[in-house]
Image (cartoon, rainbow, N blue to C red; front, top):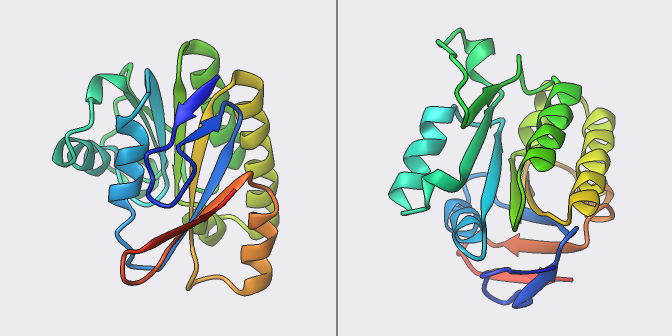
Length: 192
């Protein structure tokens, strides 16, 4: 199954099972790429949010006019920060961004229970590394990419270029089928 990508200077479509790495500046405007990724050719999508709370993700989706009925959010921050956290059908929680096994399990649960064209966004690997460790996040990333392949889904994984050294960036690049590189000026290059 092919998915429309809707990212400038990238292939028009990608195959199910494709994991895409989004390299971006620390303060880069990733919302545009992220929300275009969800808006197009999608039946259901899951946002794994390690940077913002579920409420902030909902506000972003609303602001960019993304169909929230298709959205499920995995909030990894609210429990640790002590916010109220009543799960719903569309909002789930794990204890913290370093609960890598919990994140992988929730993604698997989502992919198993949703049919059609399904997308995943992990925003962001950088935060996961900050809370956990690089080796653990590499391992979790490999598991998530394997789940995408198993369920014919596609995923977009955010990683900040300015926070990590080149060896770390290369280590993650190697695990993805495609890399989208967002420059400081907002221009986009892609390698697939």
